[in-house]
Length: 160
Image (tube, rainbow, N blue to C red; front, top):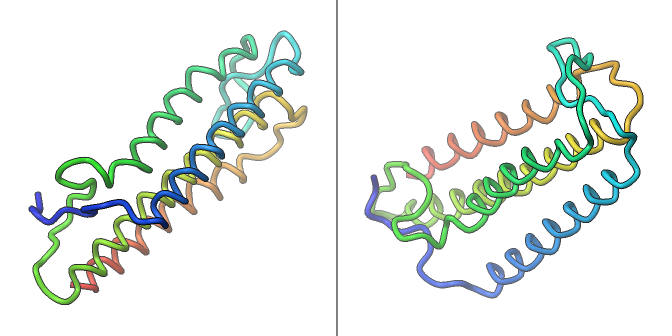
């Protein structure tokens, strides 16, 4: 693990991002609560590889995965303030180090926002949509997460 810390002090940009992120988290939870209140008594709770539902349950079943995804998003968003940083990359002392740290912080924040988007998508897909014809939206979201992670990893490596 690198001894280089990602962030030493919060800047005004950090405070703005943190505030907006917390407001977005609360808004997503508000939308989920609203969707649960409008959902039928039985909704699909699991989907097979083809996108067809293969398990059913109460609409409140969405709460457990949503809590888990919220915790992951909060850890990603605020891990830059933890001692030791949040990304296990070989940061090197030198001119590229600061750029590597900025990219790592940006990656963690983008992943945190993507977790909120995925959580909202799962809630809408499960609670609000009647037709579950395609798995393509899930493939697009997961592909975007993998793509963003790969791009930032390459950018951080090249910034050395």
